[in-house]
Image 1: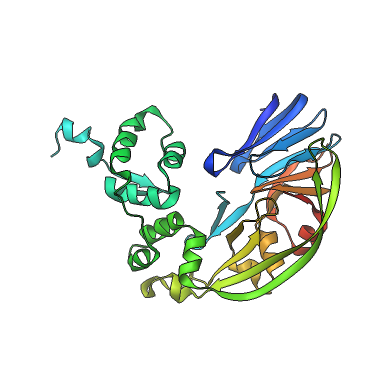
Image 2: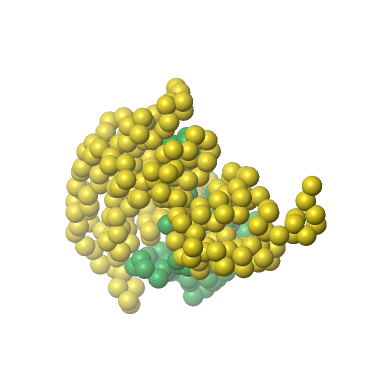
Length: 83
Length: 236
């Protein structure tokens, strides 16, 4: 289901840190499997984090957020990295 | 048979940690302390609903005196699931320090990375990023009775965050490192769900793929070495 926001938590990390997408105008987003999110900006979007430098995303594209994955040697599956 | 009073006491409950059920209170608390180090992080990550406040209160009481699980201890566990949970809670960095993995190959890549200043103005930086591929022989990781045909040597790639300068180890699939290529290993850790991305951004452990407006979600796939080197636009 498509939703709208100006501010969206893309992921919560260790130590209460947050990857936060912020834009001056509303953008649409859809949440998918494995914590994935796709979003369509209507103006520049900025991803902020307490420790990592910002990322500035342009309009005119569709963006797809996923988590980096790691392997589980015991059951041979892949799952999101817990940072 | 337990009385109602006994059943309502969190000390008598059975706990599920990382998908494995049946832990006693003290076993669960040891694993949680091993994983989360401090009580505040434990509360934030584990105490997620009101029904757990009783458990949290009791955990606080025992937290300081609860010892963490050591690598040496976890290696003795015969129960594969218990070992798996213990290894997960110990964390790959601590595990790799203790098991002394073999460095298979190191590769330094020259990158032109993109960043933005406080006014959101784009600038580029040249950097050398080093990736190391490590292996732990399966005999060190699994017990003899667990060494069946599914068991393989365990591989991890070591990389450094360009913002925090911290080193990270990430487990990778042995199938992805048959060429002993550390860049292929780090590429494997990025699994996208859109075809033909134009650029990739990474902020810590989250990945943003930029694609055409009409792009659709596809079956997830891992990046190849070439895709990783050609598409990565910004890492912070």
